[in-house]
Length: 122
Length: 144
Image 1 (cartoon, rainbow over the protein chains, first blue to last red):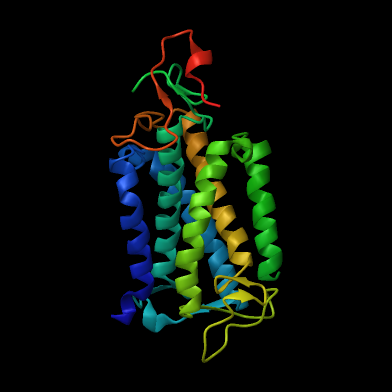
Image 2: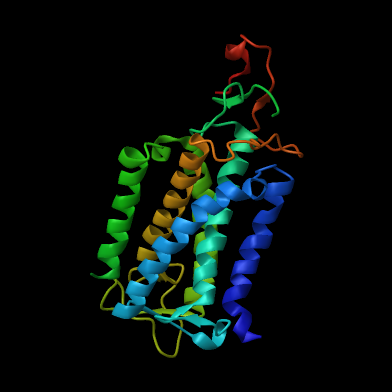
């Protein structure tokens, strides 16, 4: 049970944000290839930071409350999953804000949602 | 480098990436700050669980506050901590969120699944955008 403590937090984040994809049409999972393009460098960069911090002793983990799967360098699987789950949640939030408000983010296709006004429903 | 130094550096790096390198300039957009305000609230909750339960423990020599105690929860507020977590974690989280969103917008601009575009919501939401105004009447449809 306690082995699921860290993963439980991650599941809470995934479940807590899933409705944004469905009910607000955030369409982050729907754009899974674009999501992968984002996640690969983010996981690499932040896992590197984490490995450095672990090597320097900045922080340590209570392994008994993680899955127990640890990558070389002492990086728990749970921590790597954190760098997948939190970015997904942040993108779902950004796209949900855009879906509701039509505030621009900077990649708007021509004739779509612009400056707080929905010009079509594409 | 200490965690404090790295966390500040992380924020500087992602803002430079956002403004000068990828030129996404999310930090000037209200959509970014609205989403960040939501994310940071939940970061305080989830990170508070991870640090308050001492699943992650910090060395006091590399943060502004002191080390996570061996046998009790750290300070909830104060001693360099906010909701049990070192304030440095807020900078770490900001860097994580900004890098993610910069790459997302950049990929979209480069044509990687720019569509299907977000919205419209299936449910009514407060503060929602005006739907499909008559073309050319943008002054009417615009929200304050």
